[in-house]
Image (tube, rainbow, N blue to C red; front, side):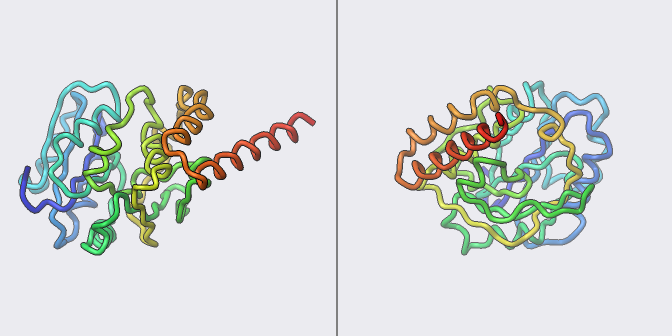
Length: 248
């Protein structure tokens, strides 16, 4: 493990072309005191990503190219190779605001397992999406570009579940928010701008959607507490009322 790395930035990549360059440019465009590394987890791209990668400091970028079974497989491999105290995940085309990330990883946040902020969806220029609690998370996910995870989280919780091809990060965040031992902190910062219309916007994770009720109940039983019980009960009550109204 490299000494002193504060942040590992993991970027899954597959034939992303110039979009990868846009992301790397946002990372390296400004000087920073933050000690970071970039891990590009490439799925045997045929568009020669090294054309873009070689434009940037070689000592800060680690390029790995091997076949993977999807985004979360690449992210899991990145977790295993990362040296940083903190980890975050970007997609090719995302533009990182590294100065805001630098604030987020300062030592006063060392007690937290997850620190998150906001993102700006560049197509609509809208901010997404403020502070979350468990109830809010049951209805929608935190953008993965808005989160930095303490590397120890993945030792405690485990890796991304590859059964869920599109919303495995949603399941990870639910597990963290159900778990009262996990310390979470929201910062009124913008971590990233991204285009939207990524795979999670274009496609639905039907396995996750079809199992959502089961997932919530399973997590409730795993992390049983009075507050979790109340939140899940309210969720199912609201779901019942919504179905009654739609049936009329």
